[in-house]
Amino acid sequence: MLFSFLRSRRRRAIADRPFPPAWHDILRRCVRQTQWLDAAEAESLRRWIAVFLAEKRFEGCGGFEITDEVRLAIAGQAAITTLGLGGEWYDSLKSVLVYPGDYLVPRTTPLDGGGELEWREARVGETWSGGSMALSWPGVMDGGRLRDGPRSVVIHECAHLFDSLDGEIDGVPPLPGVDAAAWIDRFAAARERFEAALDEGRSTAFDEYAAESEVEFFAVASECFFQDPHRLARHDGELHELLAAAWRQDPKRRVPPHPARR
Ligand SMILES: [Zn+2]
Image (cartoon, rainbow, N blue to C red; front, side):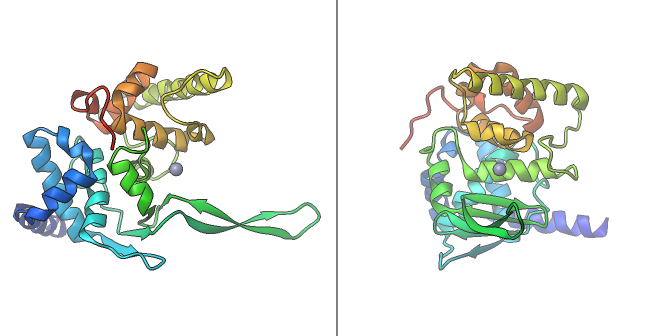
């Protein structure tokens, strides 16, 4: 109780300090979503970012250098996802590892007849329940500048983080105030509609990586929900509605129907 009181007091003090002017320019450039926020949203985003930057450890991997641009491009995209959730949802995240490009993870597959095949898999991002997130910098930039269609690796990993907060990464985030059983059924039905569209070769709002599992479906659909909400709503209005209930915001209100990309 005392700890949380002290923590909120410390957070208020951090959030009250104005941003260095250069940070506003970096955010405008690196997180294009910020241009569509109203004044109240922009202010709550600024306060959230200040606390995030003060509390999370950023670590450059593979010789990568952490600059203000890197920290703000990541914090800014993460902040967009919390606009409806409020301050404390990503407290379990302690450190953010940033790689200069896709990074390789050693993997092994058991072979018939014994032994193992060792190989390396390229990744753009990962989240571990112990409190770390890994990101590839080109992916971070492309998402922030809306150059990767409905994709954003930061939003993807934040979706996994959000999903994990009820104790399990299972494609179902915490759903306070929502009829969870109905949400889960309707979400599963949306996943079936997506898979049917893929099977029948119809166009989909987001890419087929979403079909990997219910966990990836929640994360990839959430990317589209934030990055190109009109596209999501056009393809599956009900899925858009379910994500709006889970994330407690509707980006369709602010993001224009055809967000300019550059
Ligand atoms: Zn994923």
